[in-house]
Length: 512
Image (cartoon, rainbow, N blue to C red; front, side, top):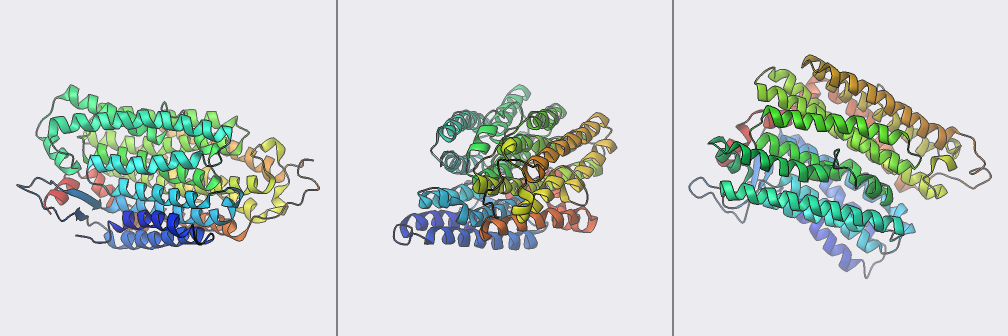
């Protein structure tokens, strides 16, 4: 067993407890303690990424061994796909928490903020490490309930309304997920993902199976805010404090939505062409509709929120292409390329979208507005924010040499090689419209001349905020190296292998 696995949950849970206790006696300790806790998780994540490779490691909670080859205990599983998402969660989490040291001074109750932040991270880590459906649900609820509170942290009318909408739709999603888990357990008499796979392989009622798949896809689709399940996202992302917006967009919709959809449909369900086509269609709709909803926005954070829908559409569409090819048993190398493009873009999105929300927070922190019409001329007075936002804008728009270009290029090449020419053309068009949208953002925020910001004492944001933005902008450049086949094979191939090999995940778990 790998003793490091439970630390990803235990450390942030203990951190939330300590912050609430010690924060009552040492008022400044909470912010530094939260950053230190998340930095430890970053080190553990990178260590796990380097050392996991093609291996799959387990932690059996309580030491419960299988009985008659039936896993009766709680399994926590770490593989090539898990470690990538753990790195996303904990690196963006650390940078957001460090950014918050200065940003959160405008709010009260910092103890609650950092304790909830640690709980949210613990929940997301738990979701990606869980090897059974029920614990995925438990950790999912820990993370999203913390997120509900953090969205409403400013306790203004808009924030409370956004949090209420998020809670209502999140509650519906949780009901659908729990309902689907109940139906799976009723039929299979197990909750372990690998064991469920073995039961489904031995035969199943196709109509029942399809019904369960639709329940699971709808529930986690709501958590991931893919169209048509996206209604909560623009309000929640725009109303939350900016470090939380970065976590919601850069991390949460991936960890409790996209990740679980990919994991379950590859490693638990038997891939069918009909379901693969549905998932690809939802991804394409999200990609196209999201960008058209974004381009007309003047509130920076709402603009970024709609782009989250669009960019996640790229990921779902690309992974869906891989699913279609695998279901047909054709062109496995192209299927692997499509899945690689989706996972690559998943990683890239965390970097550039997290950075953009931190940029938006820096602008709002300085001039007190998110309305692009009320900005202008910030480039000279806020050089670090201006430079990093330009890098992020070029990255999300798919301009070389930044990371977004290479992941989109792989997705488009995979679509063309798979003969999905329409999807490739749509991906190019959406990227062009995305560029137009972010040219508007750059022009109105940093280069437009306006009387609103004239004669105001505008200066760059504090060091902790600048540090997080600069580090993420460096990631936007360095992640481009994943396009090199040798580097891509080192970091992404273990994830692709665990998803594309229908037996590797289940046999690795049930055989241990």
